[in-house]
Length: 287
Image (cartoon, one colour):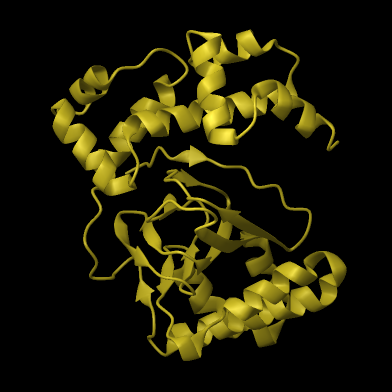
């Protein structure tokens, strides 16, 4: 089955790239990219979806999604800075180069093969790898060679835990089945339609569900409403247009799926915390 997740392009100008995020909540976003993604929550629990499997993660668990593998990691609760995580992206070519050029790294071959489908590490306190993630993130700009050594060490530790069967292999884990086919059909329709006026009724008809059943399924699966998901897609597109083009804010509002400027401004400020005009000015000043 082809998955119609949002394709996220993560440009890497190095072997790996670490991001640290602190936020009030981390919303559901069904997406994939060409890189491996390692994800460790430092504060706050949540749900994960990798392929057609779903489950729950807690702080210090480690989740891995492989290249082109649709996934979503999203938080349980809202609250002031309630959620903190680090994620590391690295390209498949890095794995291939390690295996080809360093005989010592060939012990990672089976791990990389299984990692393509996704792996979930439910860590005990004595097993915390989070400190390594924190050091890698802190050193990636100040001391990149040390950060790279720590990154290789992290991969080897993850392989060792996998060999000890202290993980959930997503492709065969006995987890609650996530109805990926149904969610994919819903998301595909939304992703193809969010820049125009779209109604719950037409989405429900497209997937042969009643509106209440559709809303309940999406909320249970993603911890967010369909309306909020559509708004986030629209605002994400608007942010891109505000930075990359010279269209007026009214034109961007219409291109993003909003019929009125006032509604666009209201939703934009609620999600981003600033107005579209302020966002454009702030982002352009960074370059």
